Length: 93
Image (cartoon, rainbow, N blue to C red; front, side, top):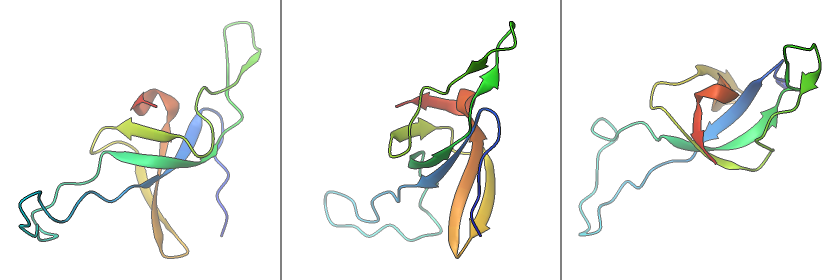
């Protein structure tokens, strides 16, 4: 299945965080926090501004982004866990 985001939505794949500390201690999955960064896999066409013109999104496919730990809607596609969120939910590129 292929997802195509609508309006100002983006599809992001989380980038896994480190499972080992600098001193070599392994962090179990249950104790690890959700990653708060990911790679943009797809972007929507944009959203309409006050004049009705389509305003393109500022992020592009392949951008590495930061977002809130609980941002977006989680979906599973072909075994991968992806996030669908608004561009406004992204903190930085």
